[in-house]
Image 1 (cartoon, helix red, strand yellow):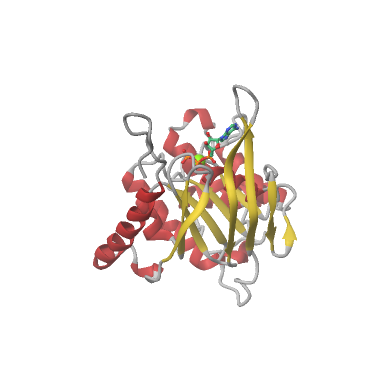
Image 2 (cartoon, helix red, strand yellow):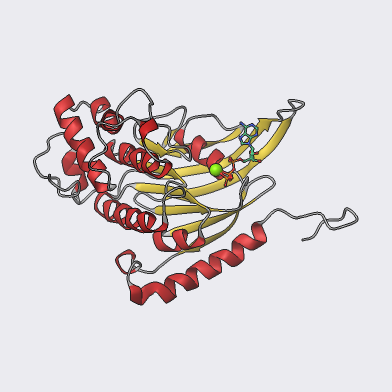
Length: 291
Ligand SMILES: Nc1ncnc2c1ncn2[C@@H]1O[C@H](COP(=O)(O)OP(=O)(O)OP(=O)(O)O)[C@@H](O)[C@H]1O
Ligand SMILES: [Mg+2]
């Protein structure tokens, strides 16, 4: 089978995996003063979960969102995806305000979100089918992306027949196969074993280097952020805000090498120090708060 990265023998938009001169002109994301409130499940009063948050993601940039549990990373990602409207503020992609979901913004959810009644191949083929590929072409693309995520034999299986890690890999393949301009990934590798995670991280960087898709990638892992990001935004809780930004200037092609391990670890250590200060304050004995 042709490699999913080779681009050989395909017609539907498949040349988009090849480098093109204008590849970095689309996919600019602007988050402007975005706030979000949820209704409290108990008394239905509004609870501020996020914001105000403002940030820009350049076309072709790989941005990691890092921060403690509950700081609003998934909420922000879903708002960028257009899956729900923020309580205040706007998200603009390539100059156009986001008002709902679009195939140009692909999401890998924290909890897989595969269609249970479709085979894994049909799930992955969905994006190409929606983009106009024939069933045969879409299935071919699906098989290539399944091979890419290390599951070449899984096409005929159903999501419930897969392990959690395999479901997550299938969800990654499905989103990549749709070739969105903006790739929104919510802890996509959290459920897979360490060895597979390393392979998927490196493959993702390989794909990103060729397509120059804009990526917003949520993670809890400072090591993962140091390996992947052009820039890391550390968020704090209560409600979620941007606490600090870290550009990561190590060349991507070197980050997975043994020689770079020390420098990547230094970046991860700086990120960890920032995340520690972003943790929610815990009550001290006697009811006062520690800083
Ligand atoms: N549907 C909902 N209804 C009420 N509150 C919600 C809802 N979804 C999220 N929240 C609250 O909003 C806040 C932000 O949640 P969110 O899931 O965005 O955080 P997160 O940073 O992605 O956390 P994690 O790292 O654990 O995935 C949390 O306090 C959460 O309890
Ligand atoms: Mg989350």
